[in-house]
Every structure is written in C-alpha cells, then in structure tokens.
Image (cartoon, rainbow, N blue to C red; front, side, top):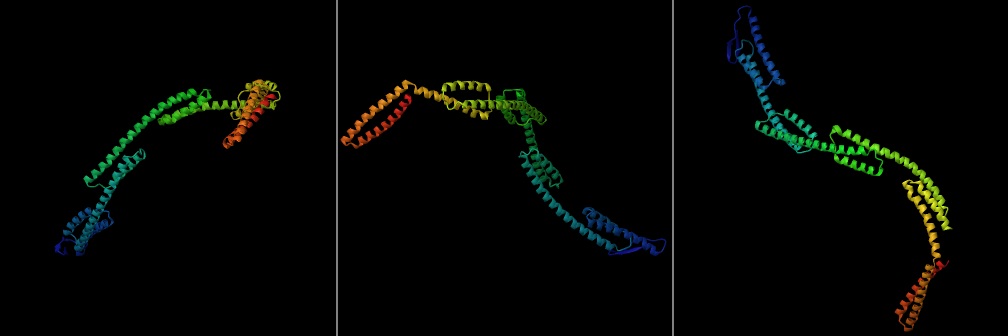
Length: 395
C-alpha cells in the first residue's frame, strides 16, 4: 500500500490476505484515528480547555505521527489543519501574555492600594474594625497574582510592617485599657463599700448629698472589667435604692404629719387673727402668748406652706407690738418734753428768720431776701410737723 503526499509517494505497508478494498479500509481507519486526534485538539483549543503549551506539544507529537503514518488519506490536509492549530496556539499565547501582563499591572495597583490602606489603618485607633479590615485585606492579597519578586517583596514588606505596627499598638491599647479597668474596679469596690455602709443611714440630708458625690465618683472612675462591672453596679444601685426608698417612706410619713400640723396651725391662725384690730394690747398679748405656746408644740408644716403661715402669725405679733408702742409713745412725758423743746427751737428760729427777711427787704438786697424767705418757709413746714408730733404725745 502506498499513499501520496506533497512530498511524493511512499509505502505505508502491505496486505497479504483478502481483497485490496479490505486493505484500503484498514489503512483508511488508521487515517481516521489521526483525524479524530486533530479534531479533539481543535475542539479543546477552541473551548479553552487545553493550555496553549500543552496543545503545542500535542501538535508536535501528531506531526511526527503523520510524517511516518501507516495510513491512507489526505495527510497533507491533516498537516494544514495542524498548521491552523499552531497559528491559533500562537494567538492564544499572545492573548494569555497580554492578559497576564494586565493582571500583573492590576495586581500591582491593588497591592499598592492594600499596602496604603493597611498603613492608614495602622496609624488609626479603630481597634476592632481595623483588625477585621486587615484580615480581609490579607485574604484579598492571597487571591492576587504574584508580581516580579522584587516588587512583590517590597509591597509585602509594607503590608506586613503595617499589620505588625497595628497589632503592637492594639495590644498596647488593650493592655492600657485593662489596667484602667482594673483601677476602676478598685475605686468602685471602695465606693461600693461606703455606699453599702450608708444604705441604712437615717441622716437624710448629708447622706443624700454623699450618695450624689459617690455617683459622680463612680462615673468618673470609668468602666471596670466586664466580668465584674454589672455585679458592682447592681450592688451599688441596691445600696442607693435601700437608702432612698427608706427616705421616701419617711418623707411620706412626715408629709402626712406636716399636713396635719398645717391644719392645726391654720386653726390657731384663725384664733390669732380674731384679735385684730387690737383693742387691748395687754389682753391680746396674753392670748397670743398662749397661741404661740400651742403653735410651737405642733411641729413642722410642709415647706411650701411654712412662709405663708409664719407670715400670717408674724403680722398679728407686729400689730400687737405696734399697739403697745403707740400707747407707750402717747404716755411718755419725756418724749412730749423733747417734742415741745423741738417746737420751741423752731419757733425761735422762725422769729429770727422773720427779722432777717425784714432787714433784707429794707436794705433792698434781693439775694439775701430770697435766701431768708426760702429758709423761713422750710422752718415753718418743719414746725408744722413738730407740732403734730408733739400733739400725738398729748392725746
């Protein structure tokens, strides 16, 4: 059997038995096997299932097989198809090279962004979100294509250094925070001990103020470790509640008593105000003294009513005192004598001023006349007031 190719005719074998058609069919099947392999190469290359280098190796192997193939068929056509496959392989290689270059460029740009982002995080104080973000950046870094060794190593050092710097700062922060929380625990335990001691106090005013101070100290101390903060706070609140609930109960009881006291004092006020207007201050004073003694025995009234009821009683006291002073003033001979002496002095002064007026009028000195008249009028007004005051003592 012979096959014809572009290189000429060559023997592919011999057939010892059977008809020539059988020999042709046998060596034709050998050709079909080679054609199937070429078909598979074309299909895999077109689908992208086979890498270009692997396809190129398969093409070389098939060329060797076709060159010495013991088959009958259009071997030149198979060679041309392999030529087309090789050309396609070259295109795929160029495309892969361009894609690889682009991927390298994009990977380098992204790694630079990741390194910059890590350096920014490393200088920040986001101790929880920052750690999560750095882990996400590390996972992303692992998915990116490797660069040339020098560039990739340099960018990795930036990224790794930033992570290390952040981790050290984060550990220092939490160590400092733990120390502050421990100090806060010591302070709050001291505050709590005092609060629990004050919880049963009945010294309401000073203890209330002290609890406010302790609350301010508690807030200023900051949080204690999480495993004790809630327990300490619940105990502190319980101590506060014990004291303030007891104070509220006492105040409620005192409020009832003070309201009852208010009603009793209002009844006394009605009795005291019946003494007005004062007719006999001595009898009124005796009655008021009895009312005052009962008043003092009653006790406190509500704070918002205290000024009102005390003011009403004070007005009765002042009215009786004014009545007493008025009577004493009217019956005091020494006061009458002092008042009469004032009247006499003003009368003598007025007489002297009247002479000065006549003298100034006679001399024609208008200025002295005007001054003397003004002084005279003023002394006459004073005299009227002095006479009224003297006559008050004469009644």
